[in-house]
Amino acid sequence: MRESLSLQYPVDPSSGQVRRPQWQRFGPLWTVFPASLWLVAFIAVPLGLVVVVSFFVRGTYGGIEYVFSLDNYVRLFDPLYVRILFVSLAIAFATTLITAWIGYPFAYIVARAPARWRSVLLMLIIVPFWTNSLIRTYAMIVLLRTEGVINTVLMNLGVISHPLPMMYNEFAVMVGMVYEFLPFMILPLFASIEKFDWTLLEAAGDLGARPWKAFLHVTLPLTFPGVIAGSLLVFIPSLGFFFIPDLLGGSKVMLISNLIKNQFLSARDWPFGAALSIGLIVITLILLGVYFRLLGNKRDLEVF
Amino acid sequence: MIRRASHWLSVTYALLVYAFLYAPIIVLVVYSFNRSRLNTVWTGFTFEWYGKLLQNGDILEATRTTLVVAVISTLAATALGTLVAVGMYKYHFRGKTALDGMLYIPIVIPEIVLGIAMLIFFTQVHIPLGLISLIIAHVTFCLPFVAIVVRSRLQGFDRSVEEAAMDLGANQWQTFVQVMLPLIMPGVVAGALLAFTMSVDDVIISFFVVGPSTTTLPIKVFSMVKFGVTPEINALSTIMLLVTLTIVIFAERLMKRGA
Image (tube, rainbow over all chains, first blue to last red; front, side):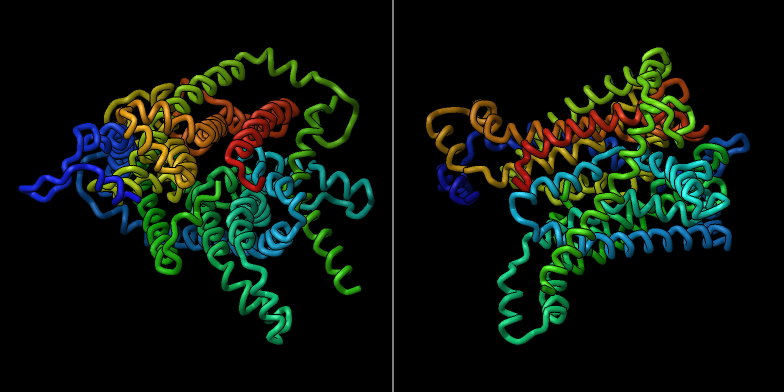
């Protein structure tokens, strides 16, 4: 298509090059240039600065002292921080696993629902996807806290005599994470299951495969891009949502997200916070690398 | 018989997941109308907490800031995002892969990283934290989403229409404004609406670049929640939920997904 467009223009006999009109040659400039400039100035440069700052040290009063040092990176391997990173990764991994576990059958059911229901059912998943994450976390607090809705109802029913301690622990953080990220898992799952060619399943059945075997060998592998895309959309952001551990975990649960946040707030050690962020970037890049190696398709991530 | 049983099992399962997604939000909304301050026992219907919001100067100021930031950054992100989507669709140029990669950074990277990167950037280049830094940050994270929504709309674009316009003597700009833009308009509007909701709802990036003297609604909610559960937060949340709900339904209609 693109070729046929350029063939309309006369070819310069001396150079053999297509002679494009002036506006055609400057086309990319006025369309692409403003956004490129913006992204370089406000994404590339700031991220570059994070790298630079991570090699400086904290000033006496919390500022940045411009002295080269690898101390921040050495500190990352302090057992205290290794443990925080490990717990953060474990929680992100568990969130991914649980949301996939809950989300896959759900997306499967919705994708197979009668067509007249499907758009409404899908909309009901998209709305929480876009709903303010902080408000959804607050909704969880209303339910889970000691004087919260769940404890009050259970005590009034006489099921429990003392309120269950459901807040300010790892359990609360997990529930909050699963609640927050479930829509991020369901949408890509739905997109890939909906595209699945159901006649393949019939073919497998005709050839004698039992339903669960057909599912395991046909449906699951062909819808796996959705699982991977969903996992990426859950795992990576879940590492950075500081307000979920802040609000649901209280001071008891310290994850890498709160740790980074605190370096820029209370501790005011920006260089160390920058080094921690570089750690997050490296984890992200590794996961993206694996993702592209496995699937190589950015488009599966565009579920919004 | 088995088929019937599995059918009802499926329906029950789907309903349970929907209940999990919606019950907390519904409880939150219901208690915004509760007379008691406690968010636990229902003691009667009232609009009192909504009235209190209107008298709260801080919240009104935060609302104003939120809307100013959202409107300006939506307009800027939509203009930049639409242009870059069109340009990347139409042309091959050096650095296209790099640009494409850069567009994906805000989508794939944890938000907190972008937040602190901008905080470091603004302090190093001496841009004061406040309205300006908020707007710059919001344009930056909205732009890629607009570009991608518009680009998906362009995929269904019939190139021959554009060629026909140029054959008839329209120049590049006229073709863009009079032929292309009307055709991709639903994508542009959908992208703008999504940018608007993202700006209005943003917590993480705003948290870092908001500065000490400015505040947006989500940041205000965050500081209120830290001090406990109050029906005012429920009321404010309900209003914000309603805004998102309206905009998202409208945007999704425009994108014609699942229709």
